[in-house]
Each structure stands twice: as structure tokens, then as C-alpha cells.
Image (cartoon, rainbow, N blue to C red; front, top):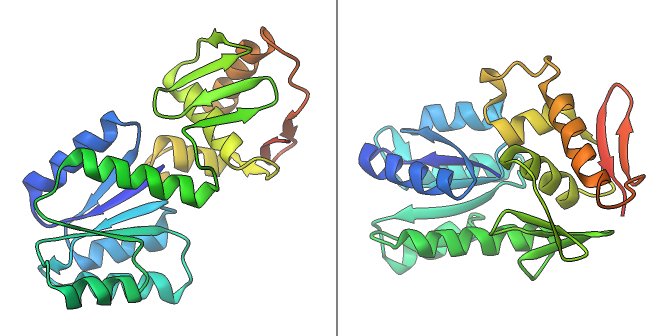
Length: 224
């Protein structure tokens, strides 16, 4: 999942990014309202961690802008403002959750995972697709209880396609969601195809995967 961290405290921003990166998320930091709005307009983020007290404005203004375009991006407000009115205002403007500083990183991780489960409509930590089972928090894949050895990127690709099953996912979408900022990645190269080809070879050793479809000149689709 791609996460935008909107936080003007550099130490906290780096701490959040390091923690979430170790948990498998792709993170980008914005330190103020203007750069955050620019990031949102040019990249597709799944979740935003939003501080309210920013040097050039209020985080509420960013939240309003996001919801005006009916963005599906989830928003968790992270702020030292613990007043009830602020919490109510944020939730009424469309925030999905609210954490008051200081907070435990493990609690943030749990709340993020709860939002992801809600977004994709599953209530357990495992995803099943045909003969395979993905353990989302442990980054493991099994086929009929036999481990399937995948690299981190192969797991990320497989997970993203399964979460979006029955939908065509373009190479650009895979690039953006697995590698991060599309402006910093050469999406025209064939490294996506190389990773997918290796993923397929490993899956095929365990089961038939005719449901893993290549949509010519577009991308890939996993059919349920």
C-alpha cells in the first residue's frame, strides 16, 4: 500500500516512515499543505497520515480537498489536538480514524491493517485464491500447506493482484503501488514483466494457474 505521511516534524516523519517501510508499506513524506496537495494530485495513494497543525495551513483543508474529488484514499488524522471538537470535525470531513499524539507505533500499525481489511472487504489476515493462501502480515504464501518461496516484490505483486481480483491491473498501476512514486520510476521498462514471469514460474511449480491472466498491452488480471 502507498502511504503519504503529511507531518512537519522531521523526526516523527522519519520515525513513521521507517516503521511503516519495515512493515512493507511504500511511504512518501510531505512537510506542508502545498506539497501534500501536489503529491495527491500527481500520485495515487491508498492511505494518508495527516497532521492538522502544518506551517502553511490546516490539515483540515487538505482533507476537504481530498474529499471534494471523492477520493477513495483512507485518511488517519495524527495530531496533538485531543479536543473533542477537532475529532468530530475530522471525522465529519471524511477522516477514517483519529490518533492523538503521542501514540504507540504498534497501535498505528493495527489501525492501518484494520482500514486495509475494511477497504478490501476481508475480515481475516489470510487471503485465499484457488490453491494458494497468502498470510498478509507474515508475507508468506502456501499451496496446500506447502510453502511457496517468493521474494518480497513477488509477494507484493501477488498480493496486490489478489486484492484486486477480477480487475485488470495495468503495468503503471503495479509500478506505482509496488515501487512507489511513479514520477521516480521508469514504468516503460520491462522489470514488471520480469517479476511477474518469475512469480508465475514459482506458482506453477505448485498448481495450475490459468486464472493468472495477461491482458495484452495492458497488464494482468487474477480471476476468481
